[in-house]
Length: 472
Image 1 (tube, rainbow, N blue to C red):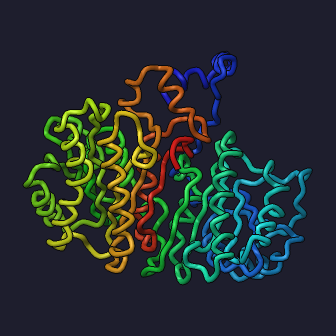
Image 2: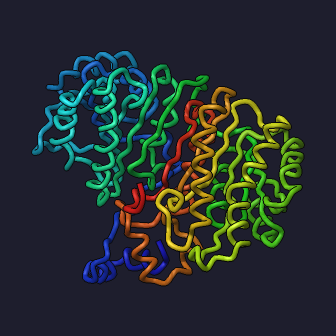
Image 3: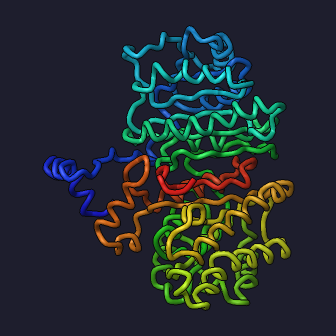
């Protein structure tokens, strides 16, 4: 949020004035705190459909947290939950769930992997209806299931796809609490690959990710690394690293243990030097659209021992309606935002610069999904990024490489600060959380994709937008 709005929210009179003019006073999002030793701490209510298949790995993950696990004592799946919790050394507590209960929760998690048809969807109502008002501020709701296109019958596909619509609607109902809801689809034989996704969604690192869907595919299983230093020993390239979101990405990857090679254009040298000095990274001055940039990047990374993480963040906007847009604005935007990434990747693949189990993360945009007036060039380029990621995801996974994309919404940067006040205020309110995100929110999602344990997460596009009302 802007300094003005934050100032207003931080005093009683300011909040009263904002309420009087109809502007929301959102609850501050709880973000990552390095003093918290685990990815989750608090009360979680765990539910499951009949014949649920993901409970074992869900509880295995919760055993590595500081979760107090509860479950509905009268649920048909109660005995299965209790037995599985005992297996992982968790003392799960069965409770009678009702609307007048005093117990509150920091997370509600439902394993819907056993749903078979539309009649089974009543299990969602039975689990969630009594406890929706018992979710704390900054709470988490997670729906888990199997990918709809990978199940055995059309009826089961319908039930699995229902989890997505349900989770998106729940997200809109709980947004006023700064709480979020997501759907997590885990493919058959990918259960051991779901750790990074589940832990990210339960944690404060996913604060501005809301109403999203993440797919986990079968891949080589990599044990979850240290929660605070998951990227220790990794080498990461971040393009456009001198300012804004790129700077936040570089700082977050370095915080997580990576050695960062920050790239930006020569006019950004002073800022890039400042950032790389702060994080003990290396800097590279180059225009990614220049013909020699891919080779220069590849040679530099080779000298650093190869790359483990590639973050394609650099991009530009050149906004005009299509009828008024100069051709060179169109060409420049497509070249920098899309074609340059493809050329760089091509050289990195051909020259074997990417280390085993490497990660490629591309920064798209919400406008690449929803479109925007005056941004035909930008929207086309960012939609192209999404197409590239979705096509390459399963193909690269066969080589042990993952590729994913983030699509930011309204993120508070120097660029958004230049937007006229009222336009800016409307923009930051048009999401379920009623507030703008911060550059670190985008960076945290990229760090999740970069995690070695995210070996089965490939071909995903995650919007970091607080569940914007614009677009899908």
